[in-house]
Image (cartoon, rainbow, N blue to C red; front, side):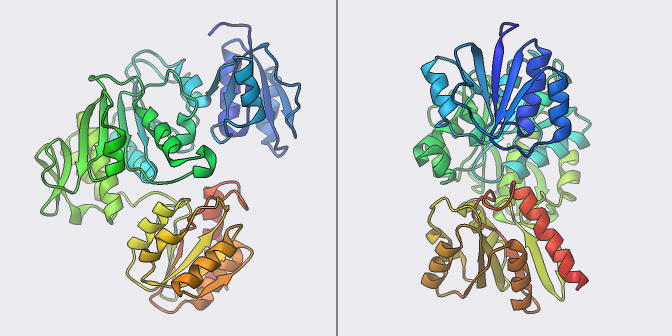
Length: 448
Protein backbone atom coordinates (compact mmCIF):
# COMPACT_ATOMS: atom_id res chain seq x y z
CA UNK A 1 0.00 0.00 0.00
CA UNK A 2 1.32 3.42 -0.85
CA UNK A 3 1.47 6.26 1.66
CA UNK A 4 -0.19 9.69 1.55
CA UNK A 5 -3.42 8.38 0.05
CA UNK A 6 -7.00 8.60 1.21
CA UNK A 7 -8.95 5.71 2.70
CA UNK A 8 -12.67 5.65 3.40
CA UNK A 9 -13.78 3.67 6.47
CA UNK A 10 -17.46 2.75 6.24
CA UNK A 11 -18.93 1.98 9.64
CA UNK A 12 -17.45 2.98 12.99
CA UNK A 13 -18.00 0.47 15.80
CA UNK A 14 -14.96 -1.32 17.23
CA UNK A 15 -13.56 -2.51 13.91
CA UNK A 16 -13.87 0.88 12.16
CA UNK A 17 -12.21 2.64 15.07
CA UNK A 18 -9.25 0.23 15.09
CA UNK A 19 -8.95 0.26 11.29
CA UNK A 20 -8.84 4.06 11.26
CA UNK A 21 -6.09 4.13 13.90
CA UNK A 22 -3.99 1.60 11.99
CA UNK A 23 -4.41 3.50 8.72
CA UNK A 24 -3.36 6.78 10.30
CA UNK A 25 -0.27 5.08 11.73
CA UNK A 26 0.61 4.00 8.19
CA UNK A 27 0.37 7.54 6.83
CA UNK A 28 -3.11 7.56 5.35
CA UNK A 29 -5.64 10.36 5.30
CA UNK A 30 -8.80 8.78 6.71
CA UNK A 31 -12.50 9.58 6.56
CA UNK A 32 -14.91 7.58 8.73
CA UNK A 33 -18.62 7.53 7.92
CA UNK A 34 -21.47 6.02 9.91
CA UNK A 35 -25.23 6.64 9.74
CA UNK A 36 -25.48 6.10 13.49
CA UNK A 37 -24.81 9.25 15.51
CA UNK A 38 -24.53 7.36 18.81
CA UNK A 39 -20.80 6.64 18.99
CA UNK A 40 -18.17 6.27 21.70
CA UNK A 41 -17.18 9.89 22.41
CA UNK A 42 -13.71 9.01 23.68
CA UNK A 43 -12.95 7.05 20.52
CA UNK A 44 -14.24 9.88 18.35
CA UNK A 45 -12.10 12.44 20.16
CA UNK A 46 -9.05 10.21 19.81
CA UNK A 47 -9.58 9.75 16.06
CA UNK A 48 -10.18 13.46 15.52
CA UNK A 49 -6.99 14.25 17.44
CA UNK A 50 -5.18 11.98 14.96
CA UNK A 51 -6.59 13.97 12.04
CA UNK A 52 -9.40 11.58 11.09
CA UNK A 53 -12.49 13.21 9.54
CA UNK A 54 -15.74 11.76 10.92
CA UNK A 55 -19.11 12.09 9.16
CA UNK A 56 -22.09 10.77 11.13
CA UNK A 57 -25.85 10.64 10.68
CA UNK A 58 -26.12 9.97 6.95
CA UNK A 59 -24.33 8.75 3.83
CA UNK A 60 -23.99 11.88 1.63
CA UNK A 61 -23.97 11.05 -2.09
CA UNK A 62 -20.90 13.19 -2.77
CA UNK A 63 -18.74 11.76 0.02
CA UNK A 64 -17.24 9.01 -2.19
CA UNK A 65 -15.14 9.91 -5.21
CA UNK A 66 -12.18 8.50 -7.16
CA UNK A 67 -9.57 10.06 -4.87
CA UNK A 68 -9.83 7.15 -2.42
CA UNK A 69 -7.34 4.31 -2.65
CA UNK A 70 -9.68 1.87 -0.93
CA UNK A 71 -12.76 1.43 1.23
CA UNK A 72 -12.50 -0.47 4.49
CA UNK A 73 -16.02 -1.72 5.24
CA UNK A 74 -17.51 -2.86 8.53
CA UNK A 75 -18.33 -6.58 8.14
CA UNK A 76 -21.96 -6.00 9.08
CA UNK A 77 -22.60 -3.67 6.14
CA UNK A 78 -23.93 -5.30 2.99
CA UNK A 79 -22.09 -5.17 -0.30
CA UNK A 80 -25.33 -3.73 -1.69
CA UNK A 81 -24.67 -0.46 0.15
CA UNK A 82 -24.68 2.50 -2.24
CA UNK A 83 -21.08 3.41 -1.37
CA UNK A 84 -19.89 -0.11 -2.17
CA UNK A 85 -21.73 -0.12 -5.48
CA UNK A 86 -20.24 3.29 -6.32
CA UNK A 87 -16.76 2.08 -5.33
CA UNK A 88 -17.12 -0.84 -7.76
CA UNK A 89 -18.02 1.56 -10.57
CA UNK A 90 -14.98 3.69 -9.69
CA UNK A 91 -12.72 0.60 -9.43
CA UNK A 92 -11.95 1.33 -5.78
CA UNK A 93 -11.07 -1.89 -3.89
CA UNK A 94 -13.35 -2.76 -0.97
CA UNK A 95 -11.82 -4.71 1.91
CA UNK A 96 -12.61 -5.13 5.59
CA UNK A 97 -10.75 -4.71 8.85
CA UNK A 98 -9.56 -8.33 8.86
CA UNK A 99 -8.02 -8.03 5.40
CA UNK A 100 -6.47 -4.67 6.27
CA UNK A 101 -4.81 -6.04 9.39
CA UNK A 102 -3.54 -9.14 7.60
CA UNK A 103 -1.65 -7.00 5.09
CA UNK A 104 0.43 -5.58 7.94
CA UNK A 105 1.07 -8.84 9.83
CA UNK A 106 4.72 -9.84 10.27
CA UNK A 107 5.69 -12.55 7.78
CA UNK A 108 6.12 -15.37 10.30
CA UNK A 109 2.84 -15.11 12.22
CA UNK A 110 0.94 -18.42 12.32
CA UNK A 111 -2.77 -17.81 11.71
CA UNK A 112 -5.45 -20.16 12.97
CA UNK A 113 -8.93 -19.36 11.67
CA UNK A 114 -12.15 -20.93 12.97
CA UNK A 115 -15.45 -20.55 11.14
CA UNK A 116 -18.75 -22.40 10.82
CA UNK A 117 -22.43 -21.75 11.38
CA UNK A 118 -22.28 -22.80 15.03
CA UNK A 119 -19.60 -23.66 17.57
CA UNK A 120 -16.90 -21.31 16.37
CA UNK A 121 -16.80 -19.17 19.53
CA UNK A 122 -16.63 -22.18 21.85
CA UNK A 123 -14.02 -23.92 19.69
CA UNK A 124 -11.88 -20.78 19.46
CA UNK A 125 -12.12 -20.20 23.22
CA UNK A 126 -11.14 -23.78 24.09
CA UNK A 127 -8.09 -23.55 21.80
CA UNK A 128 -7.08 -20.26 23.39
CA UNK A 129 -7.48 -21.55 26.96
CA UNK A 130 -5.45 -24.69 26.21
CA UNK A 131 -2.65 -22.64 24.63
CA UNK A 132 -2.69 -20.26 27.58
CA UNK A 133 -2.47 -23.19 30.00
CA UNK A 134 0.47 -24.53 27.98
CA UNK A 135 2.18 -21.12 28.27
CA UNK A 136 2.06 -20.68 24.50
CA UNK A 137 1.70 -17.04 23.46
CA UNK A 138 -1.42 -16.66 21.32
CA UNK A 139 -3.45 -13.57 20.50
CA UNK A 140 -7.23 -14.03 20.54
CA UNK A 141 -8.97 -11.87 17.93
CA UNK A 142 -11.64 -11.49 15.27
CA UNK A 143 -15.36 -12.09 15.48
CA UNK A 144 -15.00 -13.11 19.11
CA UNK A 145 -14.96 -9.41 19.95
CA UNK A 146 -11.40 -8.16 19.45
CA UNK A 147 -10.69 -6.32 16.16
CA UNK A 148 -7.71 -7.78 14.34
CA UNK A 149 -6.26 -4.34 13.58
CA UNK A 150 -5.72 -3.73 17.30
CA UNK A 151 -3.07 -6.48 17.40
CA UNK A 152 -0.92 -5.46 14.42
CA UNK A 153 1.52 -3.41 16.50
CA UNK A 154 1.93 -6.23 19.06
CA UNK A 155 2.56 -9.17 16.72
CA UNK A 156 6.02 -10.45 15.90
CA UNK A 157 7.46 -13.35 13.93
CA UNK A 158 6.35 -16.81 15.12
CA UNK A 159 3.44 -15.50 17.19
CA UNK A 160 0.06 -17.25 16.93
CA UNK A 161 -2.96 -15.23 15.78
CA UNK A 162 -6.07 -17.18 16.81
CA UNK A 163 -9.18 -15.88 15.04
CA UNK A 164 -12.87 -16.56 15.09
CA UNK A 165 -13.88 -15.61 11.54
CA UNK A 166 -17.49 -14.95 10.51
CA UNK A 167 -19.04 -15.24 7.06
CA UNK A 168 -19.50 -11.44 7.12
CA UNK A 169 -15.75 -11.00 7.61
CA UNK A 170 -14.97 -13.41 4.78
CA UNK A 171 -17.05 -11.37 2.30
CA UNK A 172 -14.35 -8.80 1.60
CA UNK A 173 -11.05 -10.65 1.93
CA UNK A 174 -8.58 -10.82 -0.95
CA UNK A 175 -5.09 -11.75 0.26
CA UNK A 176 -6.09 -13.11 3.71
CA UNK A 177 -4.76 -16.61 4.39
CA UNK A 178 -4.59 -18.92 7.39
CA UNK A 179 -2.15 -21.70 8.20
CA UNK A 180 -4.80 -23.81 9.94
CA UNK A 181 -8.51 -23.45 9.17
CA UNK A 182 -11.37 -25.09 11.06
CA UNK A 183 -14.88 -25.48 9.62
CA UNK A 184 -17.15 -26.61 12.46
CA UNK A 185 -20.39 -27.16 10.50
CA UNK A 186 -22.62 -25.59 7.83
CA UNK A 187 -26.36 -24.87 7.85
CA UNK A 188 -28.61 -22.07 6.60
CA UNK A 189 -27.94 -18.70 8.25
CA UNK A 190 -27.73 -14.99 7.37
CA UNK A 191 -29.63 -15.51 4.12
CA UNK A 192 -31.01 -11.96 4.38
CA UNK A 193 -27.43 -10.67 4.24
CA UNK A 194 -26.07 -12.94 1.51
CA UNK A 195 -29.18 -13.47 -0.60
CA UNK A 196 -28.86 -17.26 -0.89
CA UNK A 197 -27.53 -20.32 0.90
CA UNK A 198 -25.06 -20.97 -1.93
CA UNK A 199 -23.50 -17.53 -1.49
CA UNK A 200 -23.34 -18.02 2.28
CA UNK A 201 -21.49 -21.33 1.80
CA UNK A 202 -19.12 -19.79 -0.72
CA UNK A 203 -18.18 -17.16 1.86
CA UNK A 204 -17.43 -19.83 4.46
CA UNK A 205 -15.22 -21.63 1.95
CA UNK A 206 -12.96 -18.57 1.77
CA UNK A 207 -11.41 -19.62 5.09
CA UNK A 208 -9.35 -21.98 2.87
CA UNK A 209 -8.33 -19.28 0.36
CA UNK A 210 -4.72 -19.58 -0.89
CA UNK A 211 -4.19 -22.88 0.96
CA UNK A 212 -1.65 -25.39 -0.29
CA UNK A 213 -0.71 -28.85 0.98
CA UNK A 214 1.44 -27.19 3.63
CA UNK A 215 -1.71 -25.66 5.19
CA UNK A 216 -4.23 -27.63 7.23
CA UNK A 217 -8.03 -27.88 7.10
CA UNK A 218 -9.75 -29.39 10.14
CA UNK A 219 -13.23 -30.52 9.10
CA UNK A 220 -16.39 -32.05 10.52
CA UNK A 221 -16.53 -35.51 8.96
CA UNK A 222 -20.15 -35.95 10.10
CA UNK A 223 -21.41 -32.87 8.23
CA UNK A 224 -22.21 -33.61 4.58
CA UNK A 225 -22.39 -29.90 3.71
CA UNK A 226 -18.84 -29.43 5.03
CA UNK A 227 -17.53 -32.39 3.04
CA UNK A 228 -19.24 -31.28 -0.18
CA UNK A 229 -18.00 -27.72 0.21
CA UNK A 230 -14.38 -28.70 0.84
CA UNK A 231 -13.94 -31.59 -1.60
CA UNK A 232 -11.74 -29.53 -3.95
CA UNK A 233 -9.69 -27.47 -1.47
CA UNK A 234 -5.90 -27.91 -1.63
CA UNK A 235 -5.29 -28.09 2.11
CA UNK A 236 -4.06 -31.15 3.96
CA UNK A 237 -7.26 -32.43 5.59
CA UNK A 238 -7.81 -33.74 9.10
CA UNK A 239 -11.20 -34.56 10.57
CA UNK A 240 -13.18 -34.75 13.77
CA UNK A 241 -16.07 -37.19 14.02
CA UNK A 242 -18.18 -39.43 16.22
CA UNK A 243 -17.23 -42.28 13.90
CA UNK A 244 -14.53 -44.59 15.25
CA UNK A 245 -13.49 -45.29 11.66
CA UNK A 246 -11.98 -41.80 11.44
CA UNK A 247 -8.21 -42.33 11.57
CA UNK A 248 -7.15 -38.87 10.35
CA UNK A 249 -7.77 -36.72 13.41
CA UNK A 250 -10.16 -36.69 16.36
CA UNK A 251 -12.78 -39.31 17.10
CA UNK A 252 -14.88 -40.72 19.94
CA UNK A 253 -14.62 -44.44 20.68
CA UNK A 254 -16.06 -46.26 23.73
CA UNK A 255 -16.60 -43.01 25.59
CA UNK A 256 -13.12 -41.59 24.98
CA UNK A 257 -11.78 -38.90 22.67
CA UNK A 258 -8.80 -40.02 20.59
CA UNK A 259 -6.46 -38.08 18.34
CA UNK A 260 -4.60 -40.15 15.73
CA UNK A 261 -5.38 -43.27 17.84
CA UNK A 262 -3.91 -41.64 20.96
CA UNK A 263 -6.37 -41.64 23.88
CA UNK A 264 -6.84 -38.07 25.16
CA UNK A 265 -9.74 -37.88 27.65
CA UNK A 266 -12.91 -39.62 28.77
CA UNK A 267 -16.18 -37.87 27.89
CA UNK A 268 -17.14 -38.23 31.56
CA UNK A 269 -14.23 -35.94 32.43
CA UNK A 270 -15.16 -33.22 29.91
CA UNK A 271 -17.03 -30.56 31.89
CA UNK A 272 -19.12 -29.17 29.02
CA UNK A 273 -21.70 -31.67 27.84
CA UNK A 274 -23.75 -32.31 24.72
CA UNK A 275 -23.04 -33.57 21.21
CA UNK A 276 -22.39 -30.06 19.90
CA UNK A 277 -19.85 -29.37 22.64
CA UNK A 278 -18.07 -32.66 22.03
CA UNK A 279 -17.70 -31.61 18.38
CA UNK A 280 -16.22 -28.29 19.51
CA UNK A 281 -13.85 -30.09 21.88
CA UNK A 282 -12.68 -32.48 19.16
CA UNK A 283 -12.06 -29.61 16.73
CA UNK A 284 -10.04 -27.76 19.38
CA UNK A 285 -8.01 -30.86 20.25
CA UNK A 286 -7.19 -31.37 16.58
CA UNK A 287 -5.75 -27.85 16.41
CA UNK A 288 -3.69 -27.92 19.59
CA UNK A 289 -2.30 -31.39 18.91
CA UNK A 290 -1.03 -30.10 15.56
CA UNK A 291 0.69 -27.36 17.57
CA UNK A 292 2.40 -29.97 19.75
CA UNK A 293 0.47 -29.50 23.00
CA UNK A 294 0.82 -32.31 25.55
CA UNK A 295 -2.23 -34.42 26.46
CA UNK A 296 -2.04 -33.55 30.17
CA UNK A 297 -2.48 -29.84 29.46
CA UNK A 298 -5.51 -30.58 27.28
CA UNK A 299 -7.19 -32.83 29.84
CA UNK A 300 -6.54 -30.40 32.72
CA UNK A 301 -8.30 -27.62 30.80
CA UNK A 302 -11.24 -29.71 29.57
CA UNK A 303 -11.98 -30.94 33.10
CA UNK A 304 -12.58 -27.34 34.22
CA UNK A 305 -13.77 -25.40 31.14
CA UNK A 306 -17.41 -24.47 31.73
CA UNK A 307 -18.39 -23.00 28.37
CA UNK A 308 -18.83 -19.62 26.70
CA UNK A 309 -20.99 -16.74 27.87
CA UNK A 310 -24.34 -16.45 26.04
CA UNK A 311 -24.08 -20.00 24.63
CA UNK A 312 -26.37 -22.33 26.63
CA UNK A 313 -24.96 -20.50 29.67
CA UNK A 314 -26.35 -21.57 33.01
CA UNK A 315 -27.41 -18.40 34.85
CA UNK A 316 -28.95 -19.58 38.12
CA UNK A 317 -31.74 -21.53 39.76
CA UNK A 318 -34.66 -19.75 41.43
CA UNK A 319 -37.26 -21.82 43.30
CA UNK A 320 -35.94 -24.94 41.54
CA UNK A 321 -36.40 -23.31 38.09
CA UNK A 322 -33.20 -23.35 35.99
CA UNK A 323 -32.46 -20.33 33.79
CA UNK A 324 -30.22 -20.60 30.72
CA UNK A 325 -28.95 -17.79 28.51
CA UNK A 326 -28.45 -18.82 24.87
CA UNK A 327 -28.64 -15.31 23.39
CA UNK A 328 -25.93 -16.25 20.89
CA UNK A 329 -28.49 -18.52 19.18
CA UNK A 330 -29.21 -16.16 16.30
CA UNK A 331 -30.26 -18.92 13.88
CA UNK A 332 -32.49 -22.00 13.86
CA UNK A 333 -29.63 -24.52 14.05
CA UNK A 334 -28.32 -22.97 17.28
CA UNK A 335 -31.75 -23.18 18.90
CA UNK A 336 -32.09 -26.79 17.78
CA UNK A 337 -28.80 -27.49 19.55
CA UNK A 338 -29.96 -25.76 22.73
CA UNK A 339 -33.30 -27.58 22.82
CA UNK A 340 -31.49 -30.89 22.32
CA UNK A 341 -29.53 -30.22 25.50
CA UNK A 342 -32.53 -30.42 27.85
CA UNK A 343 -34.94 -33.18 28.85
CA UNK A 344 -36.85 -31.21 31.51
CA UNK A 345 -40.08 -29.30 30.75
CA UNK A 346 -38.93 -26.10 29.04
CA UNK A 347 -40.28 -22.59 28.55
CA UNK A 348 -38.67 -21.20 25.41
CA UNK A 349 -38.11 -17.49 24.75
CA UNK A 350 -38.06 -16.97 20.98
CA UNK A 351 -37.84 -13.80 18.90
CA UNK A 352 -35.89 -10.87 17.56
CA UNK A 353 -35.09 -9.49 14.13
CA UNK A 354 -37.50 -10.85 11.54
CA UNK A 355 -35.36 -12.11 8.65
CA UNK A 356 -38.26 -14.01 7.12
CA UNK A 357 -36.73 -17.40 7.90
CA UNK A 358 -39.00 -20.35 8.65
CA UNK A 359 -39.23 -21.76 12.17
CA UNK A 360 -40.65 -25.08 10.91
CA UNK A 361 -37.41 -27.02 11.37
CA UNK A 362 -37.66 -26.40 15.14
CA UNK A 363 -40.83 -28.49 15.36
CA UNK A 364 -39.18 -31.86 16.00
CA UNK A 365 -37.11 -30.30 18.83
CA UNK A 366 -40.09 -29.05 20.84
CA UNK A 367 -41.09 -32.28 22.60
CA UNK A 368 -40.15 -30.86 26.01
CA UNK A 369 -41.37 -27.30 25.37
CA UNK A 370 -44.53 -26.50 27.38
CA UNK A 371 -44.74 -22.79 26.48
CA UNK A 372 -43.22 -20.40 23.94
CA UNK A 373 -42.88 -16.72 24.85
CA UNK A 374 -42.47 -14.65 21.69
CA UNK A 375 -40.98 -11.17 21.53
CA UNK A 376 -39.46 -8.78 19.00
CA UNK A 377 -40.15 -8.26 15.31
CA UNK A 378 -40.70 -11.95 14.58
CA UNK A 379 -43.23 -12.57 17.36
CA UNK A 380 -46.37 -12.78 15.16
CA UNK A 381 -44.80 -15.38 12.89
CA UNK A 382 -43.57 -17.26 15.96
CA UNK A 383 -47.13 -17.26 17.33
CA UNK A 384 -48.38 -18.75 14.06
CA UNK A 385 -45.65 -21.40 14.23
CA UNK A 386 -46.54 -22.25 17.84
CA UNK A 387 -50.21 -22.69 16.90
CA UNK A 388 -49.23 -25.13 14.13
CA UNK A 389 -47.22 -27.09 16.69
CA UNK A 390 -50.03 -27.07 19.26
CA UNK A 391 -47.88 -25.29 21.84
CA UNK A 392 -49.23 -22.39 23.93
CA UNK A 393 -47.63 -19.06 23.06
CA UNK A 394 -47.59 -15.72 24.88
CA UNK A 395 -46.84 -12.55 22.91
CA UNK A 396 -44.93 -9.76 24.65
CA UNK A 397 -43.24 -6.54 23.59
CA UNK A 398 -39.98 -6.82 25.49
CA UNK A 399 -37.45 -9.32 26.78
CA UNK A 400 -38.14 -8.09 30.31
CA UNK A 401 -41.82 -9.02 29.97
CA UNK A 402 -40.85 -12.34 28.40
CA UNK A 403 -38.60 -13.20 31.35
CA UNK A 404 -41.24 -12.36 33.92
CA UNK A 405 -44.01 -14.30 32.16
CA UNK A 406 -41.70 -17.29 31.73
CA UNK A 407 -40.89 -17.29 35.44
CA UNK A 408 -44.53 -16.89 36.50
CA UNK A 409 -45.54 -19.74 34.15
CA UNK A 410 -42.82 -22.13 35.29
CA UNK A 411 -43.14 -24.93 37.81
CA UNK A 412 -40.46 -26.44 40.01
CA UNK A 413 -38.09 -28.53 37.91
CA UNK A 414 -38.68 -26.52 34.72
CA UNK A 415 -36.08 -24.88 32.48
CA UNK A 416 -36.46 -21.30 31.23
CA UNK A 417 -34.37 -21.00 28.08
CA UNK A 418 -33.60 -17.85 26.09
CA UNK A 419 -32.64 -19.26 22.67
CA UNK A 420 -34.13 -16.72 20.28
CA UNK A 421 -33.31 -18.21 16.83
CA UNK A 422 -33.16 -14.58 15.66
CA UNK A 423 -30.61 -11.79 15.56
CA UNK A 424 -30.89 -9.15 18.28
CA UNK A 425 -30.70 -6.01 16.17
CA UNK A 426 -34.42 -5.16 16.21
CA UNK A 427 -34.21 -4.17 19.88
CA UNK A 428 -30.58 -4.51 20.97
CA UNK A 429 -27.12 -3.51 19.84
CA UNK A 430 -26.04 -7.16 19.70
CA UNK A 431 -26.67 -10.58 21.22
CA UNK A 432 -24.32 -9.81 24.12
CA UNK A 433 -26.46 -6.86 25.23
CA UNK A 434 -29.57 -9.06 24.91
CA UNK A 435 -27.98 -11.84 26.95
CA UNK A 436 -26.67 -9.53 29.66
CA UNK A 437 -30.08 -7.91 30.04
CA UNK A 438 -31.69 -11.32 30.32
CA UNK A 439 -29.32 -12.18 33.15
CA UNK A 440 -30.08 -8.85 34.79
CA UNK A 441 -33.82 -9.54 34.57
CA UNK A 442 -33.28 -12.95 36.16
CA UNK A 443 -31.36 -11.38 39.04
CA UNK A 444 -34.22 -8.92 39.49
CA UNK A 445 -36.66 -11.85 39.75
CA UNK A 446 -34.64 -13.30 42.58
CA UNK A 447 -34.68 -9.95 44.36
CA UNK A 448 -38.50 -9.75 44.33
